[in-house]
Length: 200
Image (cartoon, rainbow, N blue to C red):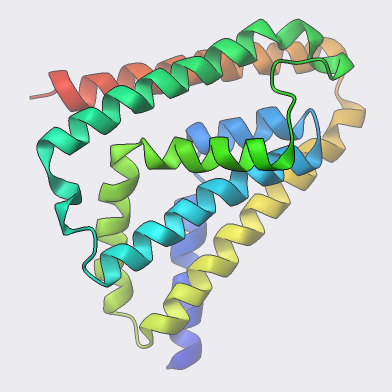
């Protein structure tokens, strides 16, 4: 039963980490510059994920479903995502020469990944639902361990694969990817604003 909880937590973690979203797009954008930058983004986002999950599990984040807080987070999240989209778009032509606007240190990227999840109200909602599932696993602690291992593995794998593939991707393809990433970020901004303020 203990291993069952770990395996189910593992599956749940991969289900949360793998789908394309703003964090994965940002990881790939930075990993094309340097492996450690993509890894920093992913680990920063994961740190916030784990913080939310533990906070929810211990009842610390009961206030997080407040509508006003959700709207405030959505505004700041939209501004931050738009800023990242601007950096990506502006630095696209210089990506292949590593002079992109996405350059930085490991810790600055860690902070960006963390901030991206901190200002995304839907991350809190997602982990609220996940915490209920984890509580029902045969071993909640092993389930949390499985979540941690799977998310960390995905961040490491995605950063490594993208950074290594840079050798096989031409400059034009890297530039195109940067432009697509910027457009996706703007798309996430539009979705966030629509779902928070206009839907229903």
